[in-house]
Amino acid sequence: MPAVDTRSGVIHYDKQKATPGYTLFTPIGLFTAYLIDMAGNVVHQWEVPNELGHYAYLLDNGNLLASVRTEEGPMGLPAKGGHLIEYDWDGNLVWEHVDHFQHHDFRRQKNGNTVYLAWELLDAETSAKVPGGLPGREHEDGIYSDVIREIDRQGNVIWEWHAATDMDMNRFPLDPTVVRSEYAHANTIFPCENGDYLINWRFNNTMLRVDKKTKEVTWYLNDIDYGQHHDVQQIENGNILFFANGADVHMHGPEGGSAVVEVDPSTNTEVWRYEGRPRRSFVSWFISGCQRQPNGNTLICEGMWGRLFEVTPDGEIVWEYVSPYVVDYEHPAFEGMNAIFRCYRYAADSPQIAGRLP
Image 1: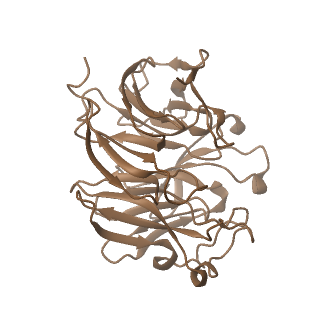
Image 2: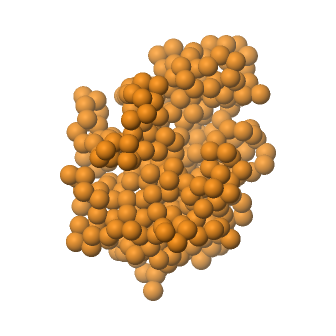
């Protein structure tokens, strides 16, 4: 059993302004996905057979789609999964797919296919062409790169996109402060309504959109000032929402912080931003995410500290929860921490929840 920090839980809740619903999160290092109500009570949970590969979310049919770690495949790279699993509401396994190179993100498509991020080991010739990063800081196997892989229900690969060959590495070099173990540490794959994919890379400060039919890059944002980012997504108004980690202390010094940013992709200009006041009061240099709510509020996962909170468009905090699940995780960055990769809010009448809770 994980240790429970009694100082945590829901520490603020404005019932008039917060978006009602149920919040799903998966503490890093545990084998459990928790669904809580607005008061922080666990109303449902799923147990998985191994440590979660960082997160899970609910499909429209109420099933849980998750990734858990396997012992095969690359070791020492962050957010390794390897075993994609789907459980029904009652915890019965209804689908699975094993790819020991799967990592970070995965999404179920409307046609029933699943798209996910995977690694591939580059050959020596291609590795020599990887620009940027810290020389001599390669993985013991060499340099891994990212593959976007789409499979059907039977596990057949029907589409792939390879970062090292399908985009111009010289146009998007590794940040000079990062290791050269990966090109370039993808952490988000987001299917757009028209079938395109939004992909986000941490190690080269790049998010881009790929035309699925042509495999061409049709839009990108590359800005080191955001200090790397996570959870890039297209929201209903067509804009791009993402968590800017602010892991750029080499540029802005220790007084920097994180932000959640909305960008108009037609101009790449910011149209909304949330940051702490003072800025240093909101900071997560890795993991983390965000979700725009139907009422215009934004649910934020400050993952480094296991803090989930909701803000209004003008930045007022109207709900705040700190995970009570502290994990002695083997990775030194997470030892004794309550870290959370992402969280999701579901309305009581949503297809994911309706009719399933007492």
